[in-house]
Length: 254
Image (cartoon, rainbow, N blue to C red; front, side):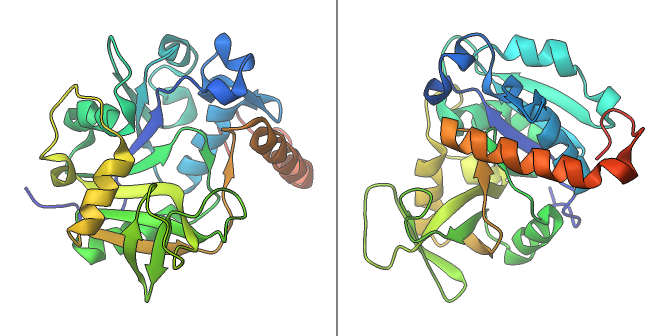
């Protein structure tokens, strides 16, 4: 099969974890339904994806995933198409969840972490991936240890090393939270095995099959109480600035 020529690819959203850093809130609701700026976080993500022309979303879910299905269904109320891939009896890890979802994802797809809010041009990232001809692409940000431990050596427009264990001094960047992959990137991994996506990315990098795309806009996340508070403030500020021109807007618009 041939890869699509347009970056309007489906989005695999990794949302199957236990979100232990947000307990006790996430003991009763999954991370996607944690309230941010007066709404479930997933509502903000959906608006952002739709704004970027990405309307096919496959949720890789596990813990309390049924609550997301009940609230968002097939996505038609939001003008998007949502499908679901459940881990099953055990959590499969980020890579294992993607492998399980492959039949729903097609030949190429974006991968977005379920706690990431990335106000960027997703289409440009998709074009860069398709132009690269590689099996995967990782977006990176020059972190300099500011938000978390740097784990990427990015130089001259390419990823020299991605590792969560090695720490050469050239590592100044961090995995930004958005990737793009061909289905074939997962060909050597068994279905229903526990696999970390980071291990797959490290192997692709070793083989010269992981393109890099540097972002200049910082990322936001709700994986920690501090990140949740920061994004809440940002989204409330944005809502106030839009309110006069958005008054009366329909649900799901943005």
